[in-house]
Each structure stands twice: as structure tokens, then as C-alpha cells.
Image (cartoon, rainbow over all chains, first blue to last red; front, side, top):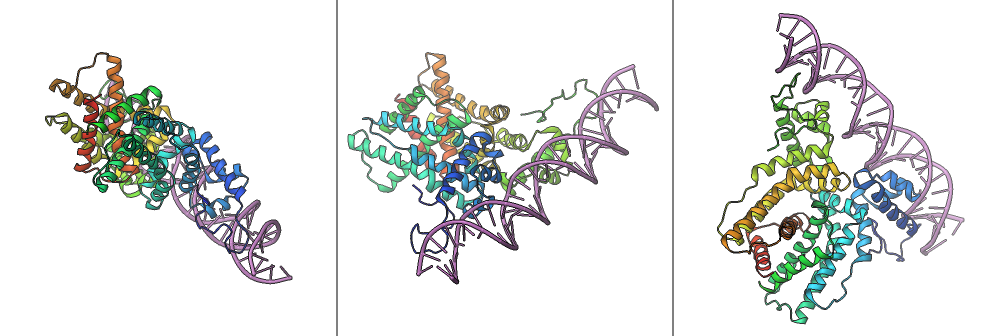
Length: 212
Length: 212
DNA sequence: CGAGTTACGCTACGGCTCGTAGCGTAAGAG
DNA sequence: CTCTTACGCTACGAGCCGTAGCGTAACTCG
């Protein structure tokens, strides 16, 4: 959980004087942002519109977020916080299917569908935004991959790694394969990620991992 | 090759009367679009700026393309036309490495890097744009996958498919895995796709395909 | 060659969004 | 009660959008 999505941070109850920022405003703004994404999509979403929906002055938005990209990242990051977990389903194959379906469920929401690619595109020219996306969204996803591999190794399905650098590289590879495939299927091919697809994909990946 | 990137088509030399559209203008506009993408990125690229660079009136752009998205799709599609091929490297593993490096080389160009994700994001709310991207870019990529699989089957590295519907599903799966992984590695993880990564990825995929 | 048709360049425009400044007011801390 | 910071509101210059209108250029057909 991000305690304060603001740009200039403050300790929540630590010494700082003056009027505190309204937490209700934060919630209202992020809710309004998600609603606007659903109705308008990334392209037609404007700061003024979000402010109006949230019942807040436009200047208040700019006091907390540098622009549309940062605002939207925080708005969708909250969804990732709420909906990402990895229950132990007993086998590597089943765990992968689970995480795939979970990624897909998030990506198929109209809010995230229209927003994620857009902010990533922006981030190719904005290193700070890239870092924000990484810490707010990407790293949270990657944790599931690391957890899944640990479990598989504990079950004896996968060998433990000798070299820790190679282990890290391998985790990055697996992460790019899983997340990339789901994203590409959903947004580029525009085909649904259903249980059948998840099963075939997981089978392919497990076969690869066990026979490397 | 797209003979005419215009919206309203005309037969090139067929009966139509009136002044023909200037092919030099087309080239100049698409060149200017790519140059503007390199310098400004998707977000700050404007139609007026492209028109000025191309030495063309802004109205001329709008006579041919409905908007920024369509223009950029055609501009980057030309790059895919020029740089996509699949020389036979003798093995499935080597062919995959080749196609991965080729995708990556395209994605790492500043023009495509900033533009591809952006237009895909737009396309989630614009079916016509989605089709344009599909026919101008995605289908061209997918051909390489189909070709690579045929070769592998001819070499005896992969079994021939029994069910043609299953074969098509499988090709889609492989395509999403390859393209998705490369895109995710390049744009989200922002790590380079070098020969080492390509080798590891190809090894993983080949192991999966052979042991399904 | 002349008439018809389409493309082009140019100018101008209303409309929208951006991001900021300035002001008076509200809400906590000491 | 005073200090400090957040808030709402208004207003603004700037930039871009997409289109209309006009005169001119290029090509086809009779």
C-alpha cells in the first residue's frame, strides 16, 4: 500500500505544521480518475474533468501530481494492490495458471486496459515516470513470480539455482515471458485470456522450465 | 508494402480524374513523422509540427489521415516492412534467436519505442485503429512465426499438427509469447535484448515446444 | 485545347486543454 | 491567537485541434 500518493511527501502525523491534506480528496480523486478512464479512456481523460468529478479544484490535483501520467499510475496501482495474490494451488502448473488469470483479470478491466500501455509509452521518455511504474506496479507483479518459483523449488519441481546472479536473470526472464505474453494476448491480439489459454501457456512454460 | 497509406483509396493509374496525390508528399510526411517521433516522442508530437517539417500544409495531413494515431501507425509500419525477414539459420533455436533480435532491434529504435505502445493503447478504444495496426504491423510479424514453425517441422524438430484449429491456436500462443516477451523486456523492464538474453529465451521456448 | 475534377497551400477560426498565478478562506500545530 | 499549509475559485496566456473557405495547380477526358 502506498501511504500517500502525493509528490511531495509528508510524515502522516510527524511534526509538520499547517493544514493537512485531505485523505477524502485523495480517495475521491483516484476514484474519479478510474471512473473517467472507464468512460473516456486515456486519450480523452483530462485533468479538469477528473477534478470536476472528484468535486475538487483543478489546482488541488496539480499540487499532488505532476500530470496525467503520474495520476493515472497511482490510480491503477491501487487496483494492483487490491487484486494481486498467489494462493498455493499445489503445483507449478496450477500456480502459473493462477497468476496468469489474475494478471489477465486486471488487464481486462477497462481502466487498466486503456491506461497501462499509455503510461508505459510515456515512460519511454520519462525516467522518473518509469521508476514510479516500476515500484507501484511492476515490482508487485514480479513478487508473485519469485514466490511461485520458491514454492516450485520447495516442492522439488524445479532445481535450486547455483549462481544467484543467474537465478536473478532467470527470474527476470520468466517474468517478462509471463507478463509479456498476457499483455500481448490481451492488448495486441485482443483475444481473451481464458482458462484454456492459461492452461496451454502454463503447460508450455512448465515444459520449458523443467527441460532446460 | 502499403501502396497508398491514404484513407480514401484510389486506383494508382485507374481511370480516376483530377489531380493525383503527390507521392513525394507522402514520403515527406512519413519521414517527418518518424523524425518528430525521435525528437519529441509520441506525447509531444503534433500534427502541425509534422506538417511544418514535411513542408506541407496541415490540411494535407488531414486529407489523408484521420489523426495522429493513424499517421504514426503508417509511419512505423514502413519500418517493419523494411526490416523484417527470417533467414534460415539451420535450427529452431537459432531461428527464434534471429527473430527475437530482429523484433528487438525494431523496438529499440526511438521512433518505434515511443510510438508502438501508444497506438496500441489508443486502439483499445478504437476498433478501426486496432485493425489497421493488425494488418500493418502485427500480421507481418506473425508470418515469421508461421514460417519458423514450418521450417522446424520440415527439419523434424517439431511434430506436424493433427488438428488445424489446434495448430492455429498454438501459433497464436507462440506468437504472443515471443512478441510479448520481447516487448515487455524492452519497454517495461527496460533492459536490453542482447544475444545472451535471446539465447536464454530461445532455449526456454524450444525446450517447452519439444516437450509439450 | 478547354472543361471538369481533385489535390494543394494558405489563412483564419472557435473550442478545448494545459499549467500557473493570485486571492481569500479553512484547518490543523504550537 | 498566530503561524503554516491546504483548499476553492477565478482568470489567464499559450498551444493544439480539426475544419472552412478560397484561390491555385495538376491531371483526365472529350
